[in-house]
Image (cartoon, rainbow, N blue to C red; front, side):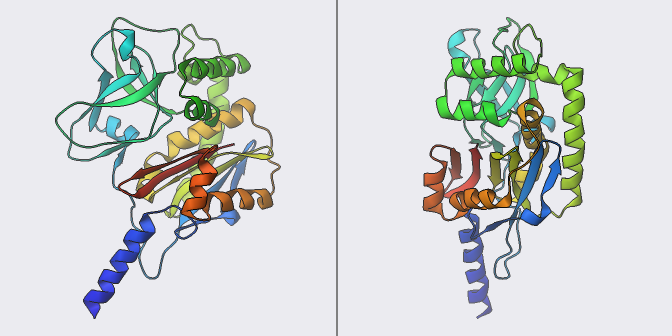
Length: 310
């Protein structure tokens, strides 16, 4: 009888982790954090019928993998422009690595942004990820070492996902740099992080939100981000390890949006409830909801990451 009960709990845990809906999650409206032009509402994992909240999908986030030398990223191998939309990923450990669409790696011959969520499995042969350039004015003969950049802001991620068009990605970056009066010879998205005024404003937000996140419990697996009278995006992951492993660069992307074009938060909870009901009501409803608003990344039948834009 004990074995049957244990097996039933195991099946329940497996089933629960296979989806990111209200069956496994709740939006913690009472714990929302607001600073100037940005409001963050945590999304938490439910504890189900005696099944403890586990770490979730097991993979190392890209920023940690690069920092610890678990992977290296390099150009595809030629200076030819035909290779600009792919980067080589070489694994250095026995752990899978999770790379999210919208993450930026800086260096190489140009800074790049990853197009799609990807799991890099540990293996000896080269693997490749699809990327877009986020530094229009540089194509260097000598390759710099790639390092982790950040998550792009929701506006750029939305352009990426809705178009997969390099010209439109460059156009959005140019628009943002002009709007922020950020001057840079190579038209690099990452150049904002060398602008003292911009960095000062951004760091104020980051200090507040990372502090609030550190002070809460570890059941958070996602966020809803609001500026002005609209939701500017959501990111929800299968488990706390994936979320906390990339929470800081993820928040940085939302802070970028709030600093650039945000306005004081006026949106009430009612419209947010309606939006989240569409996103988390059920798996079929979720698939329909994200069709024109974002995407769901699945691995082996499991929903690993759900994200939407305004």
